[in-house]
Length: 310
Image 1 (spheres, rainbow, N blue to C red):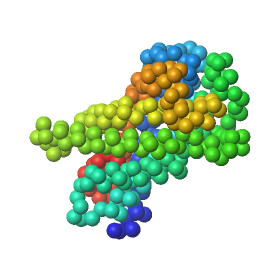
Image 2: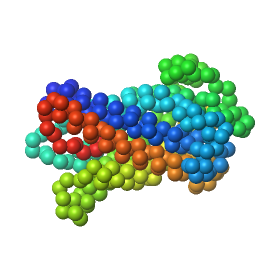
Image 3: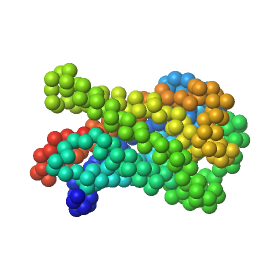
Image 4: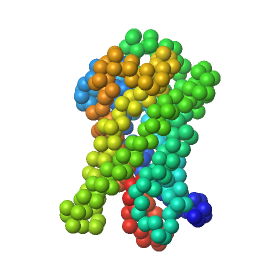
């Protein structure tokens, strides 16, 4: 076990590349994330296609509403991806030996640990981000009554401070439990990705997967993991920006509430927008990440093959 690798330049490059790739991809597909958030949180908003939801939002609040809260989201994502990629590659370097080779179970365990550490350290940023994104939204009178009086936030730090002062520090970790459960999302994605890549190589008799094929495989694997874990994401959104009543409920109680008020379809409200956003963003982020890592190592004079998805 070589602890020097934990603080190596290589680990830092992976972390910076993951953060930069995530920020780039999220900037491109942010409007889809905005629509997804609205559909998940607003109980009174009727389910509709992504295109109709975008058109309605532009008509009601202007085109700028599609990018409301972009800055805090990018800040949160940058920190989150940096923590995840640094932890994943750092921990993996600690447990790697020359004799172990590829080990899917080991990588899945490391990914779960990295995901859990990421959730614990960055949840306050995502709670503040959720509030900022919904700030200024033209909610129905019913939604306004449910959500109650909320202060105006000037930015991420201001939001964190005001939430802590008014609702207590524990509110900054609202939705952390389902977030920890959602650590299985990248684990599922990773497993499916590796399986599809192996099948691709078997069918086409090739050891290398082209860039476009990697993009498609990455999108498919993220799509599958998202569908399987989406109900937990709905619960997470309710805990972060729901009513005071919902925020006091347990995960099981929120599931029961959603089923009672909206039926089974309520657990998948906004799924179309989420699938578009998360699959495209994830696949594009992976491409950006790999290109940045390869380019930095090229500048360093280190020739490496593209690494697999973390």
